[in-house]
Amino acid sequence: MTVLRAPFEVGGRRLPPLAVVVPALIGATLLVVVAVNRWTGPGDEHAYWLAARRLIDGLPLYDPAATPVTPFAYWYPPVVAQVIVPIALVVPDAVFSIGWIVLMLGCLWWLAGRDPLVALALVAFPPVAIEFWFRNVHLILAVLIVLAVRNRPVLFAVGAAIKIAPGLGLAYELMRGHWRAAAIIALSGAVILAVSVVLSPESWREFVAILTSRGPADVSGFLPVPYVVRAGAGLALAVIAARLSRRVGEPLLVVAIVVALPTLWTTALSTLVAIVPLVRDRQARSAP
Image (cartoon, rainbow, N blue to C red; front, side):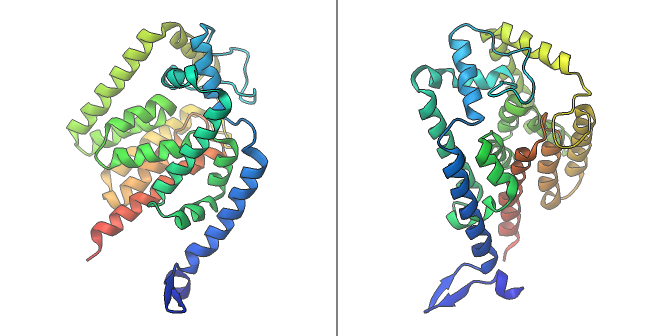
């Protein structure tokens, strides 16, 4: 085991440990397979671009007849589409998709401590490879969560505007007695919501109608558990995380957010890579 974890030397040069090299080789292989088979066409990001174009063209943002398997159906709060509107005004869909892939790769590189080999090793975690297959928002969420924990609490509100669950950062900060951070999250979230509603009140009416039609018992994921149960479990985990040491509590908060995501498909588990930089931070601070 020491051989796997420790750097080794070849010709006098120190090389990365096998525990990184082997997963990196697996991850690189998976990434090539994904790129060859999926990066020549649109993925989930195309739904965001299409949603922005619907706002630009004055069309309804949501399709009430859509199901979880409807191609390129848009399910997020209106904020995401509104933010992409300026981009969709000038950037064609194909270029947007390429930019999204670059953004995802940049997020992975950053989460890996700006180490390309570690980034490739993270792709060996199957949900990350699957996330690159479908090209959703979970690696972006992971970056927002890490930065929010690193004393940028406003980003919990930004994450909540994308997938709701990062709003658990508010409960986490409240239970830790961080009143200033909690106030920043609550106020910034309120401002984001207010501006979004003013810009497109009809889109919010559509969004609320869809949430109401699906109801709290909706099951969107690989677990046959109603969303209201998962949301409650996520809140409970966030409260528990706040009562633990940061070394344990911060990774547990990530787990809480993942559990409470509105849709819990395999891609959502890629958000768990946020634990990697948080653990690395703790190790760096405890090092002599």
